Image 1 (cartoon, helix red, strand yellow):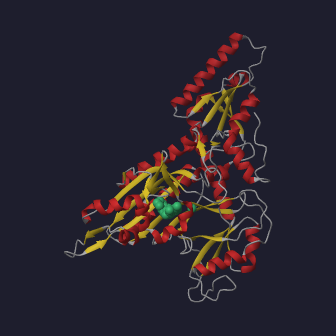
Image 2 (cartoon, helix red, strand yellow; image 1 turned 90 degrees about the horizontal axis):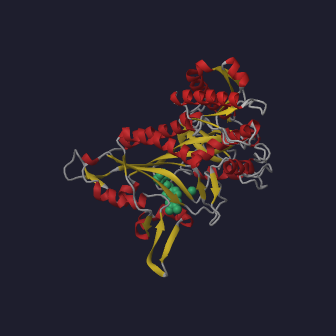
Length: 508
Ligand SMILES: O=C1CCCN[C@@H]1CCCn1cnc2cc(F)c(F)cc2c1=O
Ligand SMILES: [Mg+2]
């Protein structure tokens, strides 16, 4: 097997494509560019995330639905003003067989337009609130930019939640509840730290009222990446689609409901690969790994008698069943014709968190030898202690992977108060938190002022002047030191006062 040939530090984007291919997560769908086949290794991770998230939204009272994947141009018309920006991404069906379809229909890029005419029909009384539906599906957005597996695809899997509430406060509570679940998917399952915050007016979903977000950080190129979003739509869509209830307190008065919509996609898998992977391939957090450990027989030389070999493999089988009984997702690699070294490389490439080796020397000492995939650390575990030590070790690996990524993010999230320090910070692969006026034009100017100062590569690996920095979020956790009415916006050309600390960075 040839392992990964590109180095993560020298050619990050090629490294990434190689890893997702050779670890058998993805296959390029050669018919049409921008589409990817998701293979079992990927689907196991997605299904683990789905089970975790589904269980928790069910506990909140969210019900499941499934809407058709096509939207009529008519319903899209209703949200015309903010759709305009997205129009180039819409895929249309114009023919059935050899006949043109009179009224072309669009493939859903998101389902507001499909769902909300029915929300208007189904939501009549305040007793129908809170009204909460979620669907797991795929959406199509004909991205113009270079696509890449998981991070930017023309079709991706996601969940989209769409809820309706009586008041702004009730909607606001749910926005944050869901955002915290998104943070949990990253931090508890994928061992990826995220910053929670609000998108600026310039970066929010234009059709909404406000957008909250979890923002990731990719150490390899110092870029920020939007992890998942939970929007409060305010009454914007209920006014567009006439979704009203009778005011419980004022007879005959109708109020437009307050809505939220929230989405997390298979992008989360790409973020996990980019943060944890190394030059040997994938490194999987144990909680989402299909295979948490792999048992490999070693030291079975040709001079070993068939009887001894038989006895050894029987002992190995007992170890296998001990681990299975302890709830460990494990397998034994008994493939003939492959050396242990070959097997080690293969399972390292696939990111299995813990390798367990068992040879005659181990048997004599009544131990199993282990090697951690994240740190490479080796050691031995007494066979008698496997059922407690292996689960503990897997949890330690999970926690250590998170702590390592959290430290990298914290060390590269610089709070700055001097403009001249910004570009050097970006060039040193940092994101920055600066005092900002939060005005969209100022953000545009900051993007221009921070573009092209160094010839680093784009995520797609092309040589390009470095992209400018965009706002990533207004962190809920605001640092000290910003004096309202006194601290100025950090943009030297802006004469406004700073409103809040805002995180900026080069981004996906
Ligand atoms: O981001 C989410 C979470 C799940 C439900 N939807 C919201 C807002 C989606 C914003 N968005 C995002 N992308 C889009 C692409 C299009 F081609 C298009 F017609 C519309 C959109 C569009 O509305
Ligand atoms: Mg987009």
